[in-house]
Image (cartoon, rainbow, N blue to C red):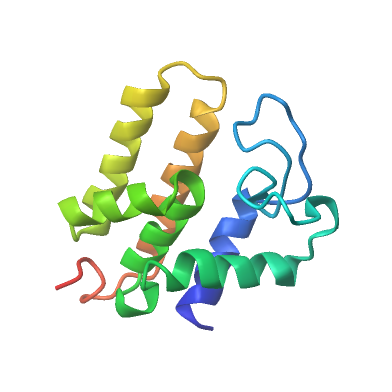
Length: 145
């Protein structure tokens, strides 16, 4: 299984089926792909394969995740899906260690989101990310260097 496939396994656990909740900042979404980000897509009929193709091209490849070691590439990818590529790159510029990267992400949630109703879900996702990333540790996978 490729790193991208493993990362998709994690992301799709959190970015499931069709949702059109007005309280969700992403608006109408399916597989985590939002109408706000992709206004010309038929979100409701988006297939899983189409979503994976978008994730591969617009997130994984644009962040050059194939050049990063596992689980750094997973953590960067999931952050981009959840917060956007710019923020994912910003966190990576501050630390090459996936554990510290996750702390940066939680710190961002705490500072910016405060008591928003979805904060708990995003923290739960980040804790799950930490656990998932730590399951397949390899001596070289703790940093980029």
